[in-house]
Length: 62
Image (tube, rainbow, N blue to C red; front, side, top):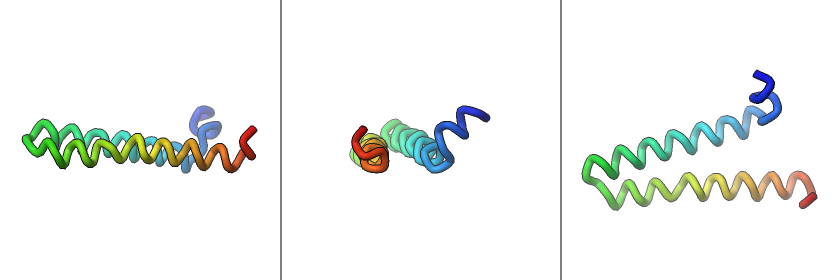
């Protein structure tokens, strides 16, 4: 529970969303819909990049 408090609820939810996105992308890719699986699979690293960018802005680039 201490880890969740240190991470923050918003960051935890964003990471959980990334895991769900990766799961959906794998399902689509393995079920034969490769192009949609790849398209949705690219959302997770984009979302992680936005999280990092916002964290840098909030901390003033320190």
